[in-house]
Image 1 (cartoon, rainbow, N blue to C red):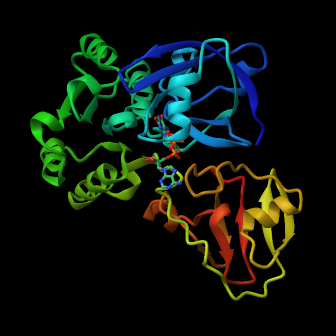
Image 2 (image 1 turned 90 degrees about the vertical axis):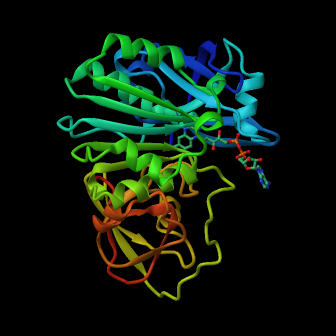
Length: 337
Ligand SMILES: Cc1cc2nc3c(=O)[nH]c(=O)nc-3n(C[C@H](O)[C@H](O)[C@H](O)COP(=O)(O)OP(=O)(O)OC[C@H]3O[C@@H](n4cnc5c(N)ncnc54)[C@H](O)[C@@H]3O)c2cc1C
């Protein structure tokens, strides 16, 4: 993955715990950093003798022609506090172009979005873009611990005034209404099932919201989830080994078919990189989803696959960075959407 030095052009205090950072888009960066509402940027931040790779969703809408991320402090978190405490206008950060699949594609069904805390970041981008470019109704359920922690309160109020017929925003404050549970979600959806559902927030919030919507009978194809999984939350079974004597696997990359020699004990991604094949990838920790490809033949086992939904898995989606081969006839398509 290529990183580009982008200059911080603006910083806004959103709440006592969150700041937005806008990056200057000049020359070639304007086309390199074009994005779809809901996508994220990958930042490489200097840390001690090394660096930290972190993903941050874009909170600006593509229509605004601004490249803005919003970062909420995580208690004792390294990157989120470094950004909030140390970064100033004029600083340069190494950033890779936008990616991610938390993007509305249907544009025919109304949207209901569930966000909690910093999970509002990709969600507000989707809301602004959808309201400005479609006639769809958009409903937001936004959970926070208290009123002071609501990120983008003014922007959401303004959107409610600008689109009173189409935008409905419901704030859930746990200091007043208690924690969100399955009943809260079910009552909110209220049998309006012919929608696309987008969910983003801390893992327990996403899990219970997804489960509640599934129980109502919504199909996996209509549920989109962005998991803000951090290094320490991601449980990768690094002990997982497979007893396999496969010699190679096939990979379609940039329109060309490659026979990739498999190196025992390595993941499919590591084997490809060791043979100078560079599919899209970033964190290598099953968090960013950038190395998702379609398996068209054979069997693999993944050390961690929690960011893939059941319907992704049914379609043959795998994470190259987590996949170990189980059969000798594996083919992957790195060009498929
Ligand atoms: C696709 C994607 C999009 C995202 N978008 C956003 C966004 O828009 N806004 C946003 O704010 N966040 C977003 N995130 C989350 C973000 O990438 C980081 O995970 C988050 O900022 C925490 O990183 P950190 O370096 O501050 O925390 P880390 O330093 O990684 O720490 C995370 C947690 O682990 C604990 N911890 C750290 N080290 C250890 C250790 N050695 N042992 C035990 N515990 C430890 C910390 O106390 C903390 O609670 C996104 C994540 C993904 C995957």
